[in-house]
Image 1 (cartoon, rainbow, N blue to C red):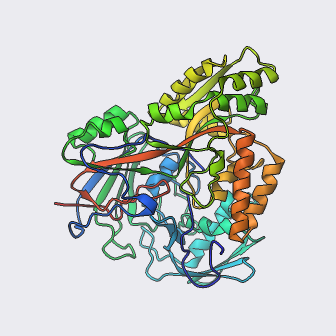
Image 2: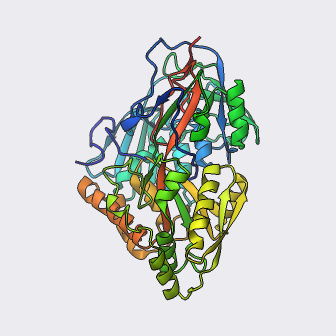
Image 3: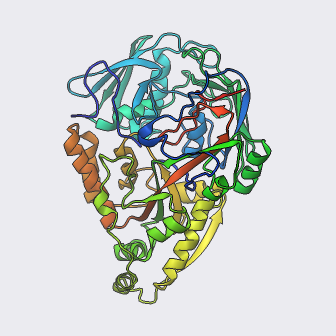
Length: 523
């Protein structure tokens, strides 16, 4: 069974689930907890009343946006909110599959090299302009780098040609077969030749851009021309940037904000009546990442020693308050079919073994390292403190450096100027998209990891259409990364979202988004 069918149909359950980064703490809530409503991708929908139109809400987000232009944005925290503004040919759903969006159907050729999409009628951009296939060609050709020669998105690197035989048809031709390419077609589509996306973004989503003030907020309003009639219900949404979790919590208590995603467990438990909290496992990987190019992390024995020195169970119990699932690779158990569970106990806590490996690496007395952590995520900062204490037992003195989110993006992720960092890597729509960051020449390989054996396995996983063989390649890739200790893979932490109990229709996804299209206020 393959991941798609070669006929005019919709992708059934594409097991999904980095590029960017974001994490939070896990949670439960004494006031009103729905810990398993999102299990297996089920929506957290309220059935008590019919959706009501009107009103506005405020949603707290901890980080500023990196770019408004969806083709330049790298931070998951940006895509989290612009999910409401932009759409692609396809769109992720709460079950981990793909739904029709701008395209109403598609066909795949027998050789798997040609994808033909039929554009739905009645799709308009937020400026009132009708969307045609030319807009799709423009957007995806830009992402594929067909004119520049350098793809903006690695997901489109295998695209050879994109054509529009008529206004309602788009044909994408690939250089070689690629099983994961279908998920690339969730990428945002913007008007052809539009140059102001980073100042005044225009999409086709349920909400349209109103205002952005750096460090303060992003405001969107209802798209009255949205092709799904009656959606969205809200007139306006403000995504308020509140990097201080205490300030965000106080704003929730005082009624200034209505929805607080990624609220800390201990904070959620302080709330009494008037609020509801949803808590569930998410598709995200928290890790201690090494700069594999910098000494002594260019030595696998040093990386393995740190893996043996880190007690993941202690971190899950102490930092996540037990609300996290231990992992052994850069893949979440959410991708159950592809997840290699044999790696979870590859590095049991063993102080003596860690010391022995450090001695073999020529560091019998240990060494000093810096863990650079984005201050906007207290969960990562707390994790860094626990790890620093654990590393002391093997003679490693860890200094914790907290930096602003923008500095982390520029210096750590883009500049690769760091020794180690703790971060959360968000899920994608295909396991190859997640693991591809470890390919030697990958643009988002901020760990500077290089392994020819892994490159070969992932090259095979990319083009393999037989599902069982592809699963085998993905599991083998996880094993290579784990045994070579490219990082310390800690956990998939549970995610919390708390909102006023008058907020209805909130849905959770196994990818990093805030979907406000179904949300309404019960008056």
